[in-house]
Length: 603
Image 1 (cartoon, rainbow, N blue to C red):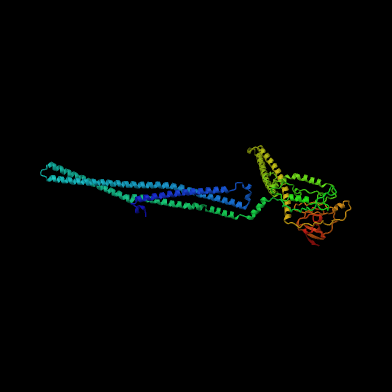
Image 2: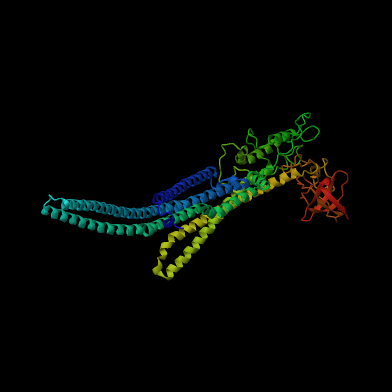
């Protein structure tokens, strides 16, 4: 079925229908344009939202990026940004394939429709003109027939009139004959015009207009097909980005699943672990004992010979907590400074062997501590902390990490400069072998500059390595001290270990019975062991058993020996009931250690 056959008389209907189809095409193009604007606005707002919440600092300068929560959030924002990019692709595809192409196609359809309807109107006009000519020839034939009939009646009337002259009769007959001839010509013309009109009319209705209507039908069908394809472009544009959008959504899911709370806790520890040891227990301050000056001006003690704990307790209270906001800078413990108390300084009575005054010893210690006070001012955590090149303003653990980072950066720069130097040397060799490629002397400034950079970086690497070694030793010292507090061993016996040798022949035997009491170098030893030991041991004997150190023990007092946790020792003498056991280390050294610190196996 076609329009030329079935709708041969519906010219105006077809005109309205084709106009409606083009209007629908334009309406769809307008809809897609607004849809493109919506997509572009949506993508723009998404990108603005992502930009608003993305971290402003670079990743290497942002400590929060190390947390899986922040990494997942940034990944989520990136996926949203990629999603916005896909919406922009949808808008771009619709704008090009629908808006531009369909708008252009609509203009072509309008021109084609206009041409077809102009042709149809010309055909109609021609048919109407032929019909008018037919009507004119018909009216003329009718008029000539009436005139001929009237002239015939006039001639017949004059012929019967006896009073009419012969001339009048002849004249009337000639007029009638003329009118008949004119009527015959009009008849022939009318017949010819009628035949021509019928032929034109048949051509118009059976050939010309059906062809025009068929062309309009083909045009409208092509427009409808193209419009349907345009409808499909909406879904096609979406389907093209569905895989990428699916990956974006999958990436969001992966980002959500990658949050690791346990790891974030570890990262927080790594970022903010100071490396300081925990403060020790407060010592008991015995205010019932009164400090008295002994007769000797070179010794400081109490009448009963027990050590005076007031000064030690004051020091302990002063270093109770180094991170408080109101703490004043103070000297660190001697163990942190790497120094040792002189053997003449103790909390008990001074040794007879020392002729130095305790006040002089304290003055000497204060002088050795003063230069190190500045480096401990950073413990306050105040806002006025001065940033130093060796990061000494940071806690030990953070200082070690920052120094490690700086050292790695310097090594990378050094490797880069060395590679550049090798490349310049090779280029210089090439220039020397083939002078036409370049002047070797032109590379000398760059080579000299590279060598200077290498020397500078090597010095910096050495400098950072030294600082790193010092920081690591400090961290290990604090870590061991902290570990000793975590797994606090039993208190060592308060009584002194038995004499390790018989009476000596030298004149200092009396001195050996006095205590040389030195406080332990580890800050974790809260209560120092005040004991009296002889300087010499008996000749080495064979072990009577084996033992393993359960806890770390710092043998800082005379007659004791240090041991590490888990160390295998040789048992030389059993505990005699005073809480001390005599052991020998494999690498050499023999002395007493607390029995409660050992796991003993007898032979």
